[in-house]
Length: 146
Image (tube, rainbow, N blue to C red; front, side, top):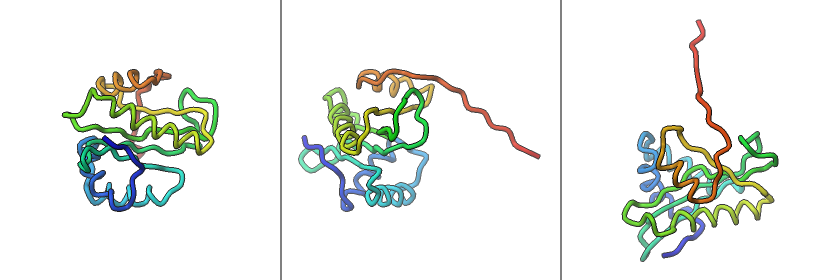
């Protein structure tokens, strides 16, 4: 199993994985976003492969605005991480996260953060297993204005 920084020719592979993580998105939309991310030195994508078959990915970025529970800037931020179900519980997500953390350190970060939906118990468990500590829980509201 190999984990490496993604390049332009990997985008379609990553989009297919990302659609399993974010099924409400469209292929074309994610492809455009990932192409832009690969050109952005404040973001990175990492791809996990086994025998040249994609089995997972991680997306990380630098955040310069306030990140809940942190006190520095920029903060490395895990925007998304996914490992194919047949390859879970093999420390692949930890290895992907380590690549993201190394990248963030190279960019001058001293903190790394992430988030997930409050009802996503699997993601919460994975984050805690990966060494994240919970810093806050919020409920967001909206109201239409007349």
